[in-house]
Image 1 (cartoon, rainbow, N blue to C red):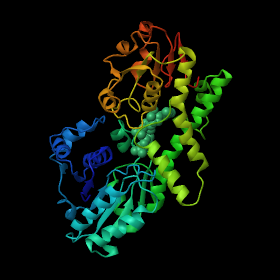
Image 2 (cartoon, rainbow, N blue to C red):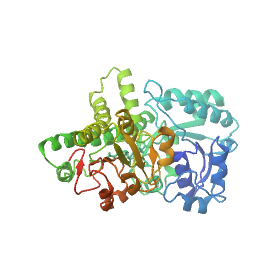
Image 3 (tube, rainbow, N blue to C red):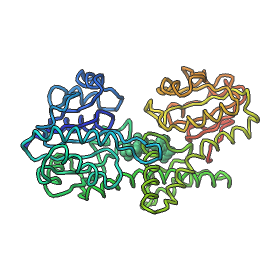
Length: 426
Ligand code: UGA
């Protein structure tokens, strides 16, 4: 088997995991990143982010099949060039493609030096048409090459933060959007050792598949939240309802957990980008807008439930348990704890907060709330509490609630039961 040479541009969680996992499957990989600290950390076998299983791969592969660099020197010799840079939300909600444009232009310049057929693949989440209409012309112009000398592809990722290595090595399917047979076979041979369905599409369909998958998962969550809001009004437990509903094989049991709503660097941004591109295409995205609206409302619902039981929140001590957007990460991007804390502050509450990993990150957003080292310390003398993140350790809380001045707990993640506990949707 020919050993593939792969240059991965972007050493964030997608690029790093992609590069490391390809290197663990016998490709020769260089990860290119402009941050010298990140490059040095990877080369020292120290993962710059926490991802389960990543340290082991770096230990095995760095210096053997994996290295990191701030230069593009590996590009001329690469069989495949993977673009894994960020596509943040632009000011108007559309995907900001400036990092993509920069990366593919820089790559194109160095591809000029190559004598062989190369394939440039985008893994970043980009709007349909980006590879064909933006990336391809930019690379051809920068490299001065003819169309048949370079293949183009789009290979979306479906990795959950925190479980990305596992998800990469055990995919449900691999989507390979290719602009021709040669590009497809090059991408397919990189994934040769993955014994799983490979779906060939056009690059634009692959781009749409990524947005659609995230939008559908976000829809499942908002749908469950809406059903939960109705169930609560009717005195029913949405978890009992959805667990039976999820046994229908057409529906499936996952992503039906009602509660505080979805956060993170992907769902809110990707659904918003899809709303934006639908509108630009002349389609009113009624469902997608509702998905975002339901999500925006859930933290406010939690505060209203708290107010109903605590009364005016001014001067009250309220504990917020969980700051990360989900468990097992210190990432607070779009965390539902952010609007919840803001609403508590607006109402004049004194906020104490606890999170096993994300307190430092949140202290940059809210420097003026009290961060505690344990859930017990945050709950001590509190007039009320909110549970915002599904950290497994919260399931074992019980005695700690007796430290509160009044035992009023609004649970946004279906973690606890007992006196004074009320769910946001149950
Ligand atoms: C998500 C997708 O799950 C990945 O497939 C995708 O590749 C990734 O975005 C991406 O586009 O890069 P991630 O953002 O890491 O992954 O997190 P998830 O585990 O999907 O959770 C997202 C949010 O939904 C969290 O805030 C979580 O608390 C919430 N959630 C999840 C619910 O409220 N209910 C559920 O049933 C499931």
